[in-house]
Image (cartoon, rainbow, N blue to C red):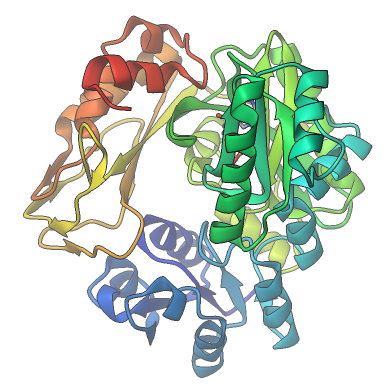
Length: 450
Ligand code: ADP
């Protein structure tokens, strides 16, 4: 096991990793920008190193600064959290070249899955069902139009390097193709430096169902069921639950095995998420995230495992501490993402927290780096906390979420908490009856949000 690891992240996910490491007796090094000197992850780690000015490019994304921080402190491994350098294959290579360990998959797996065309191709070959679409990249508008006519509209044009909901455009009809094609390309180019796009059938009423997988890097891999993350705004998840209200035990076992077998075949190491759209009883692969997800706690809650602990174990060459047959679902879990944003437009709302009180009690987990008097800097993501509840069944989890949201106090900035109070009143949310478009429609109808 490592003596000391460096956490190349900030906010709640940095705390999450520090907590797991501390329980394992592993020392921790936090890195931070000058804007984060007072941040909770800096206080909570054993040591900390300032790696640059506020801009992420010059701090949390600065590979030389992160590597230097390891060398200064003697950290042997790096946990990237999510976002920032977590899916940067070049970074993984540099980490290894410096004799350090990356707590995550290999550079090769990150590269393959980071390019959505290669990812789909690889998954198809591994027997994973995919969304029907173009065989690889689509280079010209003429080709795109021909494909649209052949597949039938609506279609979605996606940047192969895209992520975070950027670089995707829907063409409802042939007339919309030109604009959608050019915009997806332009977004791919400006956000990810790659204008290659591909085309998929646009599914009209799917759910977003993702399978949590975990591999030991030696050919053994398991799945930890699914999460339903269909409640999305601008392709960004806001409410996640496990198990999925629409997924049967047979479906879970079937798609879970397909995913676990695929990961075993490629000797995948660590945590990963295979994302699907699910419609009319069929699963369609869309992409794989080769890292810990924001919403991993709902899986931890129902399986009673610590995924970060397992990530650190396998990175240190140890075995996973569970087998597929040990993994049994217990109850139901829901997570809501609390952002410092002002409704109805979700405009970022950084500022000083004058009062913070986290909810507690049975089945409640609050992952947040907030504290009284903390000033949320304006430079980073607006996620300020994740409230995760666990109940014996879905109705109990919903009641608990309602109760816990009522206990939460975040004063000084606007947050998305009122959205969740309102959503819990909705019969469709209570019944688990929603798809990936439900929330956008609801926001439009109820908040005039477009
Ligand atoms: P990103 O990498 O930006 O997160 P994904 O490929 O994972 O992009 O897609 C994000 C979301 O976009 C999905 O959860 C879904 O809501 C929507 N989406 C993606 N592909 C399709 C499709 N073929 N049909 C309908 N919706 C889609």
